[in-house]
Length: 280
Figure 1: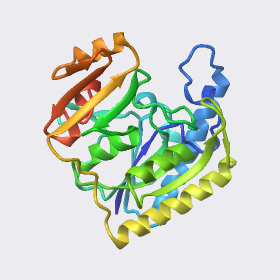
Figure 2: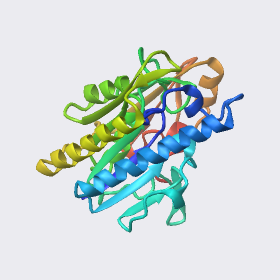
Figure 3: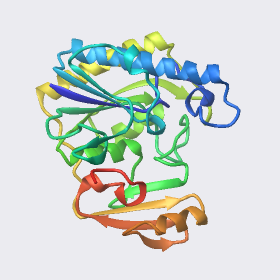
């Protein structure tokens, strides 16, 4: 079994404050930013080891938070069965590729350290792709990054089998993907602060859920997310200026001052029209 572990950071075990996660913001203390990255690295190592122990033959780890660059690969679990991508994009066949090495050879997608979509009440740092995006929809269904990434994987018939993150993000995953395994390791106290299991307990829970997701996928491969084509994709922006910028993207059609829509023939192009992602 070959798995793709796509790592964000908001839902990582033991990571409880905005400062630990959005470390690029003005005034963030360097030692707090480093603490957040260390928690991410510990989570990655723990979940990767759990996947291997549960019988995965190959594991691909991709760091996607803020484009990547948050893990120190020489300090990660060294195993020939594990491939690391320290950035969310890589060059393949001379072209830039988002979620590198995700293809039809992958048996399951695990979205790790993830979060709820923009506008979600009772969520820790909810957003969808960009803080400029107030909402995102495929064929009229509002989705977040969990749905976007599951859609992208579905192009290669790769199913979503696990989501780890805060309670709101896990609820969102279960609502859109009934039967998906989730590991809720924290809950929001406010937009910028959360509480939950201590890091070690959260990692143990995640490891259990990784094994459960692998066992469930082996017993019957879940269906991948396959929206009807062509897909009508829309984004509602947070300001008129952001709406104007989005409307200037190739193929975009302006619906109103803050909403743009475009139509795509391939589901791997789910965000290519607005965010320059997907196979080029």
